[in-house]
Length: 292
Image (tube, rainbow, N blue to C red):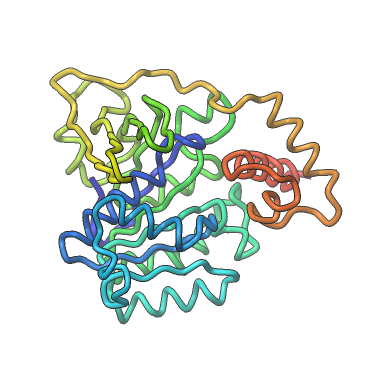
């Protein structure tokens, strides 16, 4: 589903399963003897990431082997540049970047600026892909009803810069602890056509498959993507996923903060909000204030 040596994208609403899809790819790569790097800009935490990978069937010894698995939670652009340099020597097979919405602010860059995005893409994402990795970038969906049909929020340069696949993730069955969940994976872009040729034809965004996360006794998880049947398609509704009234109220609350919010973690700590609520509100807060 994702190309080696290219930047690939997973985007969707909060709680749609984007991170689970990325970690399932990481588990598959590790279990196949490959090397994986996780860049955790969303501050999920190493304990959470490791626990999810173990539940997906990765041997804990593999996660403790620095030649096979590396994790970093960068605090500034210097940390990110160190990771890029490390990739050139280590040559990971898969790099998960979670998420683009937190990477750009580390460089003082705007998600709505094509120039800003291009600078970060060239200095960070493209270099990791040039080291041979399938770079798997996680991003959030645009908020506007019209722009959502095209892809992730922010500048259109994001979509143009994707050299691999851009996959839209939409929840089918809500992801809940102990129960799993499911999500539709549709092809928003496939520069080389290798994935699209195996998808049903006729849709603007053909269905690549349905991602299932199944939970079993003892915390064991099974992740698999079921290929679409002939003629099968995903729902065509790209409507607003988040409640616009609540988002507006949350943005007003962030605007009243002194000092202003600096990161998702800052918002979570000061507002006592969950991760997804903090991401949506902070993205919209930044978008509005970048235009003022």
